[in-house]
Amino acid sequence: MYEVGAKPSIPAPTRRSGVVAYLRRHPVFCLLLLSPGIPEYLSGSSSFAILTLNPILFFLFVGLNVGLYGPGVILIREAMIRWKKGWATVFLLGFAYAIVEEGLDLSTFFNSKAGPVGILGVYGHWLGVNWVWTVGLMLFHSSISIALPILLHRFAFPALKAQSFLAGKKLYSCLTILFFDSIALFTIVNYWAGPEIIIGSAISVLAFIYAAKKVPANLLTADLTRQPRSTRKLALLGAVFFPSTFLIGGVSAGVNIPPMIPMILEVLFTYLIIRTAFRSLGPSDNLAGRVSLAIGLVVPIMVFGLIASITTAPLILIADISFGLFLRRTWKNNSRQHLVSLARSLSPLTPNTPLTSEQNRPA
Image: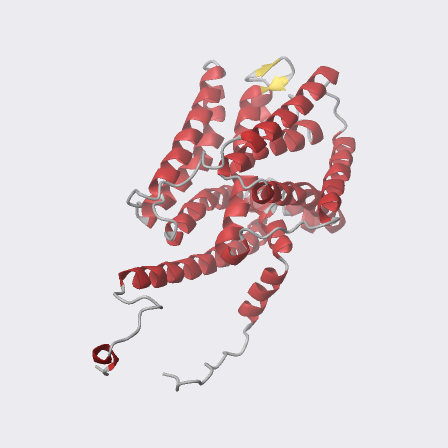
């Protein structure tokens, strides 16, 4: 208990609070850790084995990934804020980003012999496009590479959720980095899909950007009137997303069903998961539920990355543990804030309600 007029003592800063304070002062750096951190390094898509074999090459790839994912997620977040839009805009711009990365830069949407594509380079390949792979990757990048880092950043630093990070020349610098990084990746991959596909991809990117700017801001919003589901159910709901989008194409190719079926199923499952999530989050102060959903989205990716990188498990475990600590701190902060909000809502007094003499008496 403090005396009237006394200032509460401030605890000495710890190393953890110093890290959090640094990220709060450098919010862009935090976004750069989340993307490409989640889609590339937690998933094992970018192997840590290169670090032990060729550290120079590893850090070159890190730079290229940061120069691609970083501007992508920052620019999409900036558009969401400047246009005063919601999550529908983020997902549509995420589709445009996926076409830029996997189509125009890396050509995995078109090159049937690209390393990561595997059997999906043959199954569902039509008119020069790996359609089953393309649909799955567009859903993955839009949700995991773009929307999830923005969501986690909001949870970690809620006071910054409406703050612009690209004032003045920073916006043009971000666009310039993305442009030259894309040129570098296109040159390294060295695959020419043909003028028709390149022009069609560019038109598709512009179409998604136009749709993102025109879509209603409230198209994808949480139903604040519904009773929220438990944190466990929300985590399980998030955990279904990655396996469903990742496995449907491969399983369908194995049993050789018509490629259109897995494409429809991937879109349908994604829609149902997102729709159910927005209908299950409840009031806006249910931050613990929202963090649980995000944790559910990430954990299967971490498990997959650990299995895929079993030969370099100690290295990827460092990334998993670091990200796990970030999620744990985010969970604790939001759970505490939720309890405080709940206590205030249940209290018969508001901050502006004066205490009566009866209420002033000590218990």
